[in-house]
Length: 272
Image (cartoon, rainbow, N blue to C red; front, top):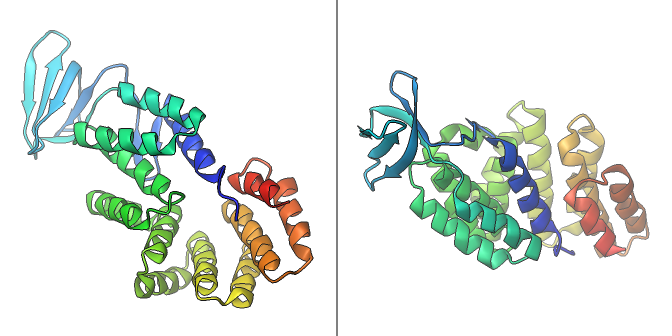
């Protein structure tokens, strides 16, 4: 499997999404030109500077120079403006220096605790660790995010990523339980993504033919879940290639032709 381009597509798309808005799945944050706090009454207080303490206390310098203190429980959310380090991340992505990206994201996560960007950096880390095969790190980041934002664990894409992290970490029983739960959940997207993970589980156990059937079922039975089709089709091609089936080339081309904007199209080109 050629994964050289895969992480850069994932990270590049995440960064492009944050350039105009700070929207991350269950989070809906608007990037402001200045920091702000949303107090316990739901009112937004704008400022010119913001700091956070280890206990979650927020110090906001207002536009008239006054310093306001928001202790935990007296505010709903606090946000800093976009950290300068995130511009470095954008540059490093173009240079394909993923290790440096991780180092910066770790620093942002620590320095911007309680200021919005810590969770953003945590989500980016959770995703970026996957192609680096740092599965335990990815699982840890996801678990921290799920603890802070429980609703995120219901997002099918992030659940699937988390299952991949668990799978890579050898936590097979947990993955199997989540797969069964999602397939029975009634959510078509969750079931589709879980079925792909079930194929990955079987593939990891050397059951390539069984894995192939799961990928094919996903591609055929979940046509309406268009977000999962590039991955299901690509993994079908990979499984066919492992089985020395000549139809592999047909499926790689199918990914390229039908899903040209996906990261899986780039990976498929590397297999040809």
